[in-house]
Amino acid sequence: MKPLPELPPLPALTRAECELVDRYLEVLDLVGRINPTRGTHTYTALRAAQALVGRATALRDALTLMHDRGESRLHATTLTRALRVLDGERRATRATLPPDSEG
Image 1: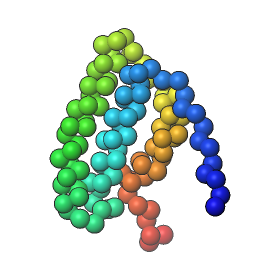
Image 2: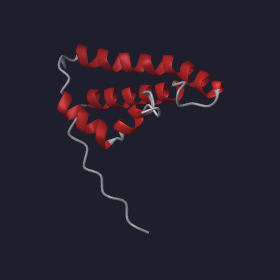
Image 3: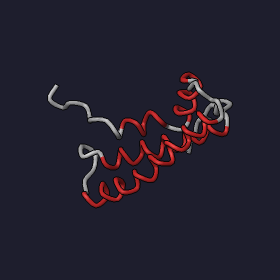
Image 4: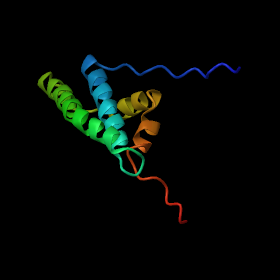
């Protein structure tokens, strides 16, 4: 069995940025479960949609906290690196349309 490749370290983030990334990924995962082009059961999508309300509120709260603390800029390059380390690209793919198979 091959050892798993070592992931790059997470970039340095403020506690508020960590919260933002975590809440964003939670919302993204739920949207992926709701996506009608990827799912197979309405109950799964319904449960994800119900949970989305709370996770979206937590995401809003994370951004509010950042704003209140004076963190007025999102450092896209750093946040992108963090999202990539946390498998954000694969998770985002589940929230999009699948490739067109009629090509």
